[in-house]
Image 1 (cartoon, one colour):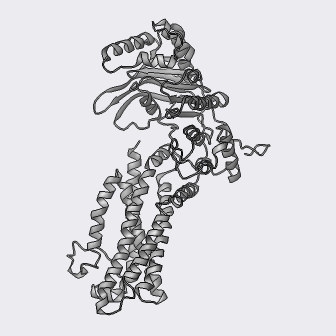
Image 2: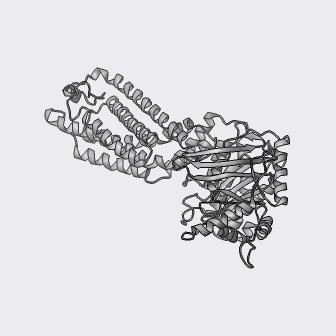
Image 3: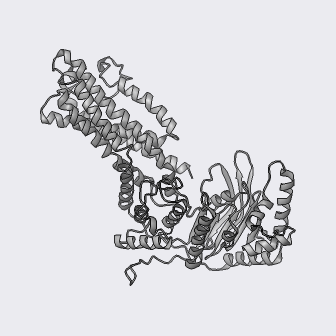
Length: 578
């Protein structure tokens, strides 16, 4: 797959894509408000299409309807076809990144996630270099993505181009971009749209994007523009045709005026002047469209014969012509997906000072504190309370900080997970396993650090076997806490709910753990399954030391069970975010 010059890799050529939407109607289920009213259009290969209109006109609603994304609570009628095939979704552009990664790391990991397993690492590397060159990202390849726009990461324009770079790694025929110029200046907006225009014209891609009031030079880059007003089609054609059409219907553009600004102002509904603005917008829509009953297209077509005939001919060719089948790229193995996601998450974790460094420092300080507080506790009747206290602080420190630490960072990934899952990049199970594997090393090392520092200072039994068993037990305690944290983050709809549930749940675990309440006095219906620590304390609390290994095995079973519950909850949440 490597080309002869050994500097590029050839991907399977993507077939040209024609996307059509007919009588697309979108209604809010709850309020029955009509958001789109029988909108019809077509996008051809090699064209860059702009969806334009005033705020509330229905631009993003149309884009989401074409993608069948973010449509919860909406009723959608009509058909969307790609090369004559009915489809539900294609690529969506969103600026969602792991901010601690560099641009190059992000693209290499995206290549691992998206390019088929049949491609070698060298071929994937060459493809990444191609994309970096095509999107002009050479100057920021080693920069961390960060938060664009605040001076601590790549620029907003580079972030936009990086989003495009991620999507074109597999050479797709169809791209969608939602407001690709939002948050950047007019110069950078022109540069971003120019990149899209070049991708469409040179590579035969079909690109549809929403855009809000572009500068005049940016507006002229689009091959076609679709104007929306009150959820209806107000125009579909080239920018030059738009200028002529609006002049024909009585709204010529004044001299020295940005056409895009004029069109949107003409179609906008101004607060305080709603009736007049609505009447004007409806007048334009009525003049711009008509229903062609004879062709039985059930479409709103432009009344001007040259625009009407042009769109009719294009729609007819799409319906009658034999278009190439959609190309399906090869699959990526689950192992490759999980490993790539693990690398991404692990790099993010170790570069997050509040997760890694803070936890290690915290456990180091707590180890010294516990060791000096219970320094060389005597192994007699008077020392039982101190032993119980030290054990309780072991469990508490390994549990509370782990649960709340995971819940602080895990929810931040959810929007990215939803996007990439619905883009078909990977299944939830790969993401879930990668997060577990990336978190467990961190939430093992810190516990080891605390126990190693404090164990001999406290004066616990000095035998090496007992010490190793204590380490193993503490590791399982921290893993069980990690499983609870991941599970609650996965099933809870928000961070606030996860935190509010965690506090009472951990309090119940603390009370029924057997250190402050004798397990023999807990009613059978309320008793929690507990693990013992220390022979003397175990006997006094009516634990059976002969069950130690069974208890350790039970903890492993408990950890796996909680992880499974969390996985089921996460799958349901992600699927409901469609």
